[in-house]
Length: 294
Image 1 (cartoon, helix red, strand yellow):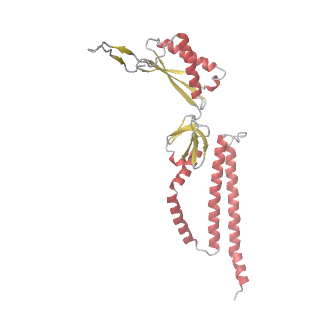
Image 2: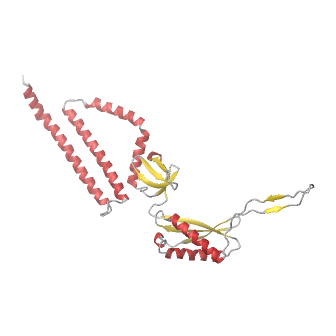
């Protein structure tokens, strides 16, 4: 009979070397994939912009990909090593599959959040400091993770939105923004003259040292948008740098108000009319108020 030492040496020669090769091979494959992923990351991140949002998003995706690849490769290596030890891995795989199925049913929302968050980062649908509207909430994007996106609105309220609930995303500051305004004037005013004044104000704004750099294109007057109850509404728009449309719109309205006051252009405003009717049989006066008008 063979001694225990002989059996062990025989096992070590046939199976031990295979186990060692599997472990070394797994480490080599992980390192090769890591080098490939890192090389791909360096191509995506421009030199000198390591702190940019694109760099942060790319780094997040790189770490996720590395972790997933490492888990898959080492899991396969462990199963191969167990087979070399004579362990039947078929029942084990079946049990793991059942457990994974149960966990999957219990964590559907979490898995949905993570998968949707991964594609949000991958497709660059939004970035930090974008102004977006998602899941009925709007605000400035403070952070984007695999599971949740954090928004802060104008009042300073923080909204934490699970990525799985993001079915529709409205990004108001993607690459560039647009300020769309309607300016109402009285019917008695000369519309051509009003449009000329608006163009002058827009040109002054474009030449301003503070607001000019915020504009990507000259102001465009689209024309008369609608006829209101007591006003002619003229529509115009600016193409601005991201998130600057509201600042430009506020400054333009201020300058338009000053220009209209200077040129005696009437801006309609809501008002009420008080009337006094004839007295009734008791001698009392009838006093009424008409409905509000512009």
